[in-house]
Length: 129
Image 1: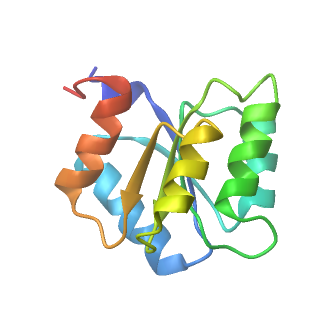
Image 2 (image 1 turned 90 degrees about the vertical axis):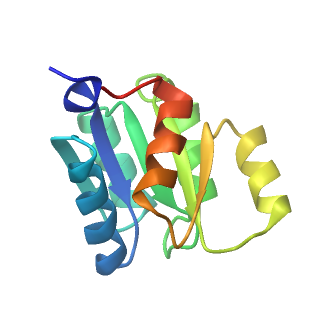
Image 3 (image 1 turned 120 degrees about the vertical axis):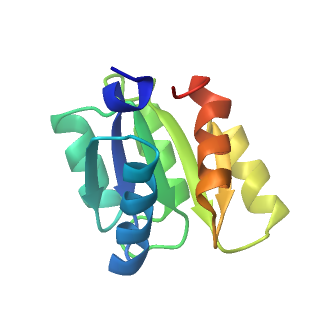
């Protein structure tokens, strides 16, 4: 069993199309355990009920944005060790720095390629194969 098959991934994005694209890319990379949420509030509910190893979260979402969600994940003892990759369409250095300060493991820019997603995940977990 590959490392990708063992990792439980939570995708958090308010756009259905984005969630589908992320899920498809993860599937192509060999991930099998993929859950989705529409915003940080729903994502946090899922994380507290069944913690995942990796969170890929959009930054710009209603109810609870990616930074708020990252803070919630990091402040909860049962979820704080999860790897967290923030996804953003903004090339905003301040956002990237804030995400890093709050404990994000990586940042992935939209639009992403499967290669860039693989590199972002492998930077956190090591080789997937």
